[in-house]
Length: 329
Length: 265
Ligand SMILES: Nc1ncnc2c1ncn2[C@@H]1O[C@H](COP(=O)(O)OP(=O)(O)OP(=O)(O)O)[C@@H](O)[C@H]1O
Ligand SMILES: [Mg+2]
Image (cartoon, rainbow over all chains, first blue to last red; front, side, top):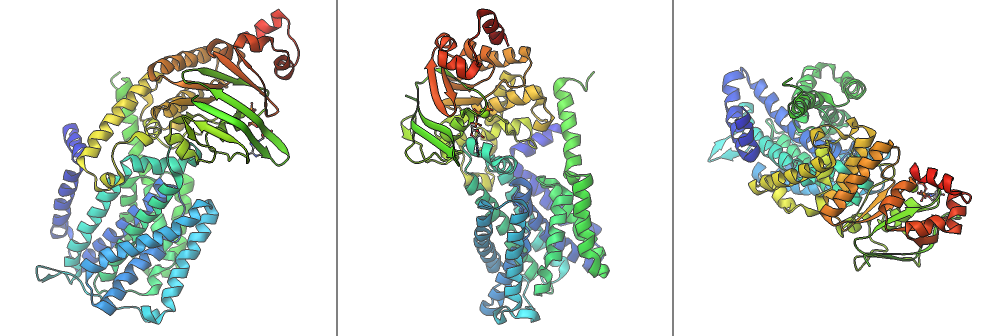
């Protein structure tokens, strides 16, 4: 087992190939109806958003409550490109990532001067402004929403039903995770954490604080934008401004907080659990904001490191004991 | 000269925290800075390292570069490292990550390499980690590498900030009260480690310290600040007998017995 771990550590790409194969097999083994496939795709999309949020909030420590706006930018880039240019996912996805990245730049600028609750307010304003802009713009089909956004084809095979679309959303999710792993496990990820923990010491170590805040915002925005595009093409291919409200934002935040801020695996597990709970509580629509708001508050109060905290605790304690020999005695 | 300031000035409102300080430090020296509380020692560090912007008319040169108005990360890149009086550890990061982030400017791979997760990076990361583990064993923290920095004791934290500052292989290391709050045994231990590190990495050092014994034992030259002004400079023996210093810093002239006590702290 340790040997296996060592190989994965050396060739992280291999880990993703294995994950891909396993996830390819999941539907045929576990799924019994189309709705489960739909939910699985949603989980993939939310994992991408959560991975992105984890970069900016969990690792770099920058509060943002406007991410749902950037997610909307991704969705509407895809929607509008379909509407006006007839483009499909393979074009809209890169475009959405790029344009969302530009919005990331705009969201990063307030973080140079503001922090904590003030930064939260600024980004909240930004996110809401985007939604209101879409809702009131005829160009974006305002409150009608954009429908019939098509699913992609691969070699002429359409992926137009929920069970097939999973095979589109899942690999994109894996790619996103791979990128986030690569960045966060590198010196860039360490620099993000240093900026989060103490920007003044970080700068003293030669870390350019503004540059890394900018990087974190742009990267996480690209994740959100990409996820937004995958969501727009999700069968039945319908987007509406109501899908990008504060409730969705709180849900995204609940994923990373409950999963464990700054913990890659925790964030993924958080996204899976919260997406399922969100779906189960859909009939209680008017209470969802309360439910997930409460989840965030309770997590922060009673297990501030979320699920990731438990994972770490188990591994770190063991490593420490082995090293000092305490375990063998 | 490795570090040079000319007419360095910083006022907070009406208070002149640093007032026209000229300072020169050649490479390889160990310099002590002493002075009463509030005399401007930490402010001097903050100005030199770019944390504070100096008032107009000031000039700071490091290793041949004008760094008067450079931001702190630029100064850090040039090879000037420092510790902080209040430590400023990365509390919620592992001990090894604390030290590895001090290596930031020397990391050999690019951002693009990092994003794409090329294998080369993991090899280089491994080498960096090994090197940093060696540094950690040097200061005696190797067993704690995977713990959170917040789980360390006060003395261990002081060793960790030291290791973090050295990780980037600086040309000049500035320490703000490295021994504050340590027990006498730990002070000795810290100073031993410091001297070994100086040898090993060829460091030039500036040490702010209240514990006179540390200054007298380790520094070849001492600069004395009072009310933001440089009031004396010289070898420890010269400083000990300087009237202005005795008045400002020690309060009154001490007889031999009292002096011996003060130095034994
Ligand atoms: N950011 C700041 N804003 C306002 N005043 C400041 C600031 N930083 C320092 N000062 C003032 O400048 C003076 C010098 O402070 P400094 O911290 O440099 O003293 P010090 O010599 O390091 O003292 P100590 O030995 O207590 O650490 C003090 O009067 C302090 O109140
Ligand atoms: Mg001070």
